[in-house]
Image 1 (cartoon, rainbow, N blue to C red):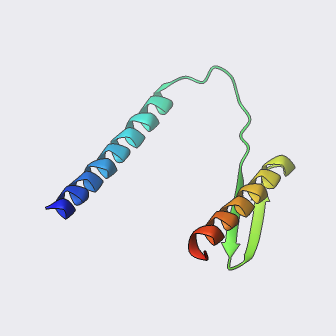
Image 2 (image 1 turned 60 degrees about the horizontal axis):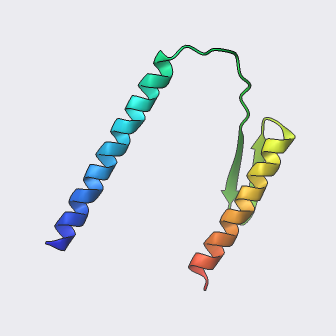
Length: 81
């Protein structure tokens, strides 16, 4: 009985998440941009223990590196204690 409730709650949460994503995308696409903005992005690809860090500018790359280090520390604490 308890497992069925958890499964039902998970399915409902997934459906709500998909619905909110769709609504957010539709609202963003429908709104008119007031001014042009600048987009900055960064990413980190972990291949084993070696991170590959890339970004559109130096500050975003540094931010990505810091977040990758934090993620590695959290993973170490959760899996190896």
